[in-house]
Length: 142
Length: 129
Image 1: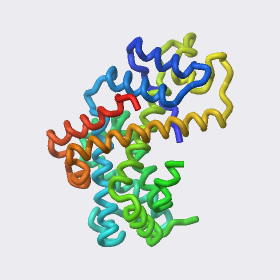
Image 2 (image 1 turned 90 degrees about the vertical axis):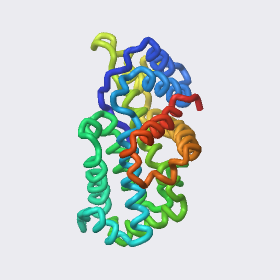
Image 3 (image 1 turned 45 degrees about the vertical axis):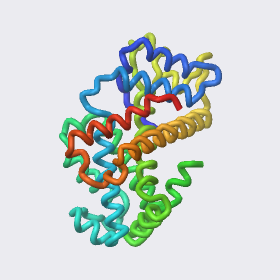
Image 4 (image 1 turned 120 degrees about the vertical axis):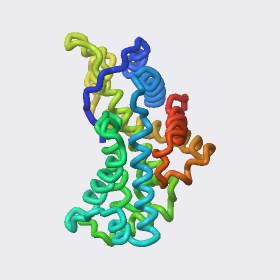
């Protein structure tokens, strides 16, 4: 699933190399990703660390998963004060867990572009795991 | 098909049993890096008249100004995702070296030192894969 958010491109001449890689007759994902991350991460302002919002999500998600493994879903949800909607079990849990994770962040972080991207990735991950089980990772690798 | 609480519980347990915390992190970070790559690759830089020099335009239109077919775009996204997955392996390896993988379920972001280490591990995404 992709997005079409209109970010400002990094203000570096090196970004032209990414455009060049996209225009190449046989465009290569390896080259594009290597160049894009290298230029973007080294050029964009780093007031908000790219790792921060997803690290909060990782902690919350893994803690919940371990709780479910050890005590069951009811107890894990109760511990995190997570309200589970009977008709929308999976999205309601994902949503509540992200709310919990973002409540521990500075709002500047959760409302930043990286925060929004982390939210999408987090909810998608939780939805995939709770809907597909072990296959969630195997399907990704195909 | 509606997923019940029992299904969600079973699926979570099955996932953890098969892939562990590392598998969880791998899926989460791959999803994140993919979103990040799509975000960067849909960026704008130029005024409307020069839009053809934007990555957001070139993602869908080739160097000969032909629009990519939907299946070509989907294949490219699939390939980008696979590349993101390679970078995640580097991040996880770094987190392991820093002995942070086991601490991931703790409130590690409350410790500024650990925040720096996590960011340092993320720096691996700028390495060539």
